[in-house]
View 1 (cartoon, rainbow, N blue to C red):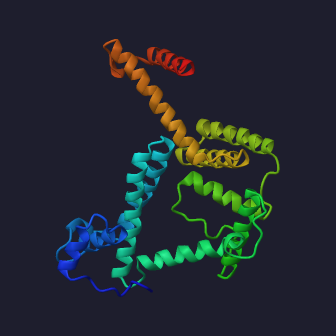
View 2 (cartoon, rainbow, N blue to C red):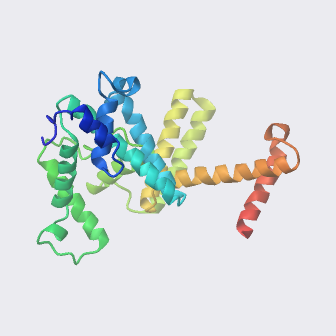
View 3 (cartoon, rainbow, N blue to C red):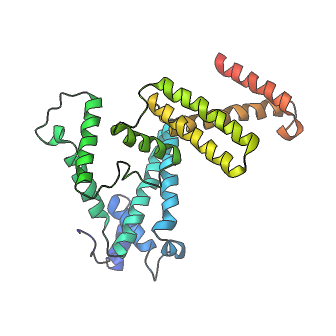
Amino acid sequence: MTDKMALPLPMDESDKLVNDEKAGLARLMEIMRRLRDPETGCPWDIEQDFASIAPYTIEEAYEVADAIERGEMGELRDELGDLLLQVVYHSQMAQEAGLFGFDDVVDSISAKMYRRHPHVFGDDSRDKSAAQQVADWEQIKAAERGAATVVSALDGVAAGLPALTRAVKLQNRAARVGFDWPETSMVLDKIVEEAGELVEARDSLGKEEIAEEFGDLLFVMANLARHLDIEPEAILRSANAKFTRRFNGVEDLLKAKGKTPEESNLEEMDALWDEVKRQEKLS
């Protein structure tokens, strides 16, 4: 552990560091330490723990993805900073608990990246396709997992991932041991089957059974995305953005008429929706 037992700086040195705009990461880490100081820190920051901060960590990762998707590079800089703060935050709490520090986190990921790229840092050939490099990466990961106790082929897929992303990762793991449909058409047939079961559940079963069938359909849809080599989480974000953009367009057209959505009806808004789509295709 490189920084687990690091002692706090004297206050004058700490003040100098947190006011040094060119101090980079060291400044951020000292700011975080000061925020968590039990005597002089921020009451909110002091009260937090790993579990309470975890949702913010996930949120910041999504905001990074959103900035990238919208092509907002200025925002991306700020969002990456917010995400970096999450790493520093968790590292500071771990250091306070005597578990590890930020340097240990850096050492861990550096060692992993070095170990998993023998074609760059070792003697392996670089003369491979990107797909083969991915396959090699997975083999190295599998060997690393083999050093630990592995009970299932699905071990190591984090439960806290977004549900669609986790579904794809679980399906990928199962596919590696041969549990997968060989043809996309078979996945499409399964979607039809699951949709029929959902309709049957809606017509004759209770809410719990309907929810279960809906989950089965979503799971197979994720599998279809995997077979089509598209990332369902990103695709759904894109669909959300498209819906938001088009609905905002409907609101703008209504506003031009001096109306709000509440003062309209489905027939009118549906016609305006089609108009927004038409304008998008022309632009």
